[in-house]
Length: 168
Image 1 (tube, rainbow, N blue to C red):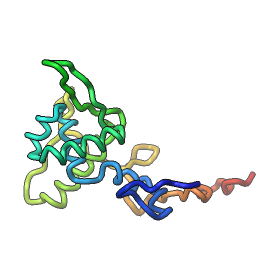
Image 2 (image 1 turned 180 degrees about the vertical axis):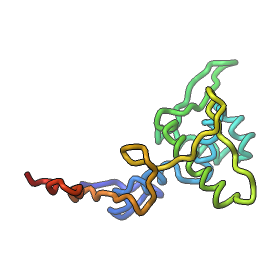
Image 3 (image 1 turned 90 degrees about the vertical axis):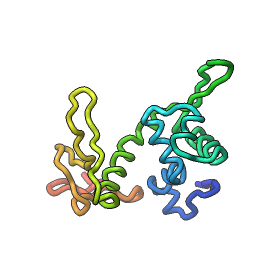
Image 4 (image 1 turned 135 degrees about the horizontal axis):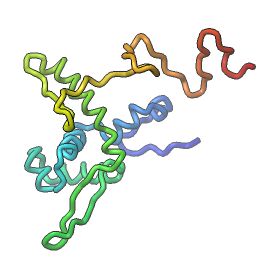
């Protein structure tokens, strides 16, 4: 298996096989995450991204191209007053909602601990949204020491009372 190395992409096999490293290579820089956040807040036009983020045109243009190439955003011709484009989140981009929510909650706890956190509310009920958590199959919260990550090349560990994987 040969993997081509793109600029700013992971180089070791470990990094090439790590979903976190590969995801960060696509969307991990500060400006890209801020653009995605603004898109989640409803921003769609180049000029609006530029104004709301205070980002230079060349940097914004570069990040939008990267997000389009990564299929996090799609460019839509809305045809108002000639050719006008909007940048809209794809399903892949919308799936980053949980990631950005978890990152915001982490920042509220550890970076802005001296300020009240932003409260995210359910539009339908007005109730505060619960913090993002990793849950077990029954919906109970799990902590780091309670999980194990299977190595792709190794069989999954067997549960107590089960035969090891690959045996009958």
